[in-house]
Image (tube, rainbow, N blue to C red; front, side):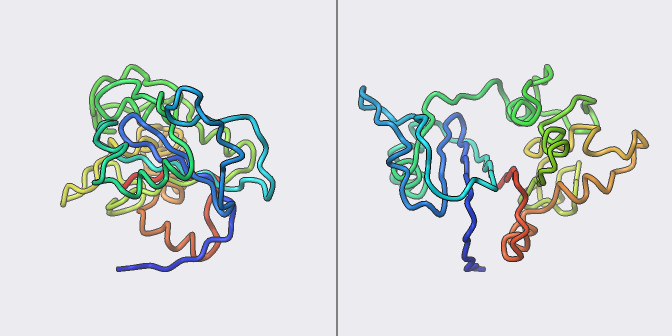
Length: 217
């Protein structure tokens, strides 16, 4: 089903694909004044120039896997990704911190792999550590995780069709998000913040996008 949505809000999107990241900013049509050419001829890097216009109110991180650098950059099989790279920027030195998937997702929101070395389920490994959400909450900033194919809000188990797996949804591994004061009952906090991707379209159309969004297709 095709959707047509007009966006008129400043958004920064960071798309991470298996060890490479590129950045996009809308509605400003060009970032040529923000990206400094690399003298070596390699991918451009960010410079400390200011951008005229509205302040950034929304940051979205879209995490996709599993393809290597050479399978994406310059590949005719990834035309949209290469359009973003050409139009905006490529963080060519952005690499995975560990393997397999889960440690990287944990580090993305907690700043550390927390010694995770496998794709354990939330029932097997959960953490009392704080995440980036504590900073958002303490500064009055909204946030959400949009997980594609997640059957219900804050799901901590693999979906029956296998399209949703918790290892791509790091917030459900943290007690500060999932538990209601340590009761073991899934909290309303998690239900309202960790939602299926279908909710993204509702939030977009109603101008209710959070300040920060982690999107896992």
